[in-house]
Length: 368
Image 1 (cartoon, rainbow, N blue to C red):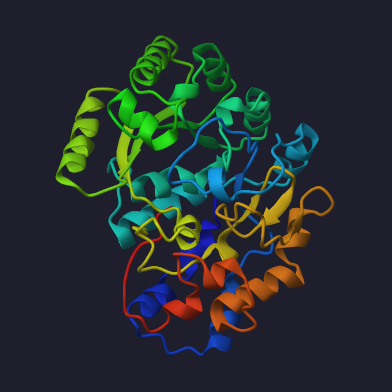
Image 2 (spheres, rainbow, N blue to C red; image 1 turned 60 degrees about the vertical axis):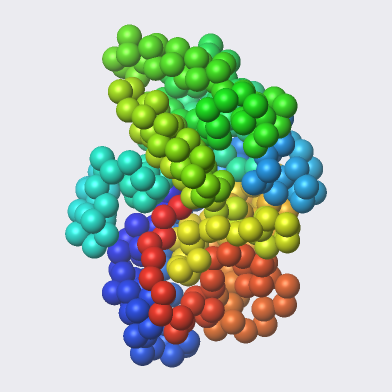
């Protein structure tokens, strides 16, 4: 979930910046953004667990994450979600009209931007650097969000599917579930995510869930399947095409996702960064915040070691954290580039800060 009003209100300024036609000083930009920023924060995602049984080559968790492994306490989760106000239907309709007019992205487009604009933007994301299907409280978390009218979404590895457990989560009111597939063979799946991954069993379980959904008209959960484009070889391009054909006749939203694990590529010199965010600048300090498994509040979901803690949801309200001097410093850093120190988002992130992006003349759409 992000602040869709801010996203719309800065559109013209953003286009000027991306076209290298910005005439505002850094101070003027900061005060303009501050005048448009909502004082009540939007929560992009809650990391309900950082427990995981995979060993993904594109994830920083196996090599770099040093945090305590844990599930988020249900009391803390309840405290956080009770501070969340979902977008109204009227607000979403207005935003989607804006998306069509300004970006030409339609809900039935099968691509990353459509998934972001029509699903992620409205939903509370319930995954982080862990596997949601290993969270023993996930059905209770979804049920609570449903009671509060908060749309929910999480991405998972289908090799972890227990059909019975996932069906309980779906029946609790899950809005969207995304299944991440990396290959059309068992060996290919294991190469990307380790020995616990597979394709044949994963595919069969997804199909079983699709059948269950088709028999229960009360279920509104959207099924999404995606494959990360890890390379651009002719063989892999064919696999991406075959992947899309595999789901063509099934009631799922299928798309190919870009490889965009930003900080991992900054820290691992052996991996080539192919982020599609290269031509953009980061808006997360104004759009939303993220709450990690221990309650630490960070600016975005990619701070896998919570190096840029803005506060803690266990001892503070989200509004206190969002409007704190520390978050204010981060926003100034993004625009002015002052006192950067070792802030990861300034020196070790694929998405440029606004300061770095000014004057580069490249264009793009924020499509996470």
